[in-house]
Length: 271
Image (cartoon, rainbow, N blue to C red; front, side, top):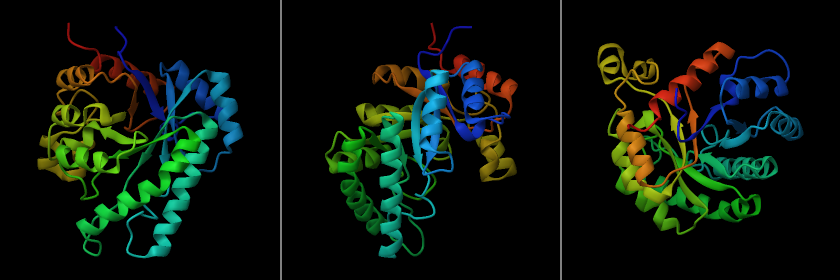
């Protein structure tokens, strides 16, 4: 089977492999992946991750800020916002040490207590504060589309990035998250060069309607409602050549090999 035109990666937490961190990295490599995504701050020491990276030859495809849900940058409490900023700073510092060039950030959460307008301004302010840290780390901040009731259209998402006015800030596009209320290829076209990193997962509107919203994700890659030929064509049109990072249920080596093969299948351009 032809390999995807994109480099493939998985989150470290998806690999259910016994042994050391180095063993896990080796298994991810042997399954057919080129990189690994890591949540930071985290329990594993950076030095251990660096040793595993160097021994396996894998790249650090992305770092996920692990504090952005528990300590939102847009919370009404300034003390919690400050804690969120500190978590983002630590994540960027770790990314710099790991040689990672892209950090995933949930910019804020809109809810009954925190208005859309407040989240918009607080998120921009927090990201602006973090840009010097990103420059020092050599790692770009990538805002992700998640179900946080915020930045709900590709045009608004693009405008939000443009208003920050920094080459160190862009978008981490999650293909599957969009299908509930949009079409991934339309977002890819609108985001264009703002699209810095990519999450790959599937979503089925049929399962959503029959079994409930979150059940929409319970479908294998290529068996839901993502139009993968349109997605790959859209990525090629905007010149995207980075990582495609799986964000789906993981498992043992056999499962990881299945995911790598499935990603090659759905991310191979037609013709």
